[in-house]
Image (cartoon, rainbow, N blue to C red; front, side, top):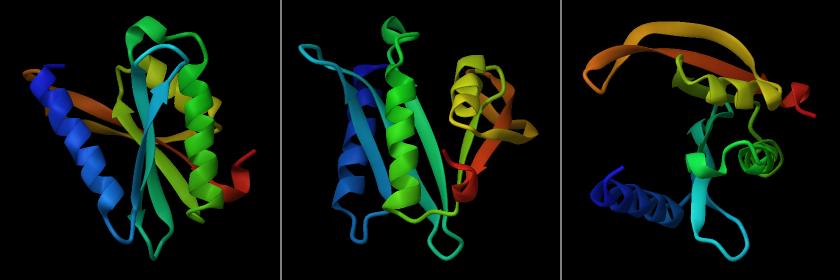
Length: 138
């Protein structure tokens, strides 16, 4: 990611934090004595239907250490308990096996795959959709 893109994303997250009512929560993942290593968030997509989306990004140098798992559990728990969501879902590139595995570790199940619905890096990609209901959490 370019520094300009990182700055743009950071500004978007800061803007989300000032919205009222707040519906998007993107939190930094940090470890002691180090800089930010990623982010994880939950965003309300429908207040009326109590739906939200979840996502987690982590610096590859820190993969496999449980940081994404810990952060994901915390934001999903927050989504169900504090935001009173009924359903939380994740959308990821179908080639992103790590993201799919993380969502499944959170108890999510695959709902389906959208075929070639995203144009990214000069080609079409499929998107896998996973979800979990509040009644299934824990």
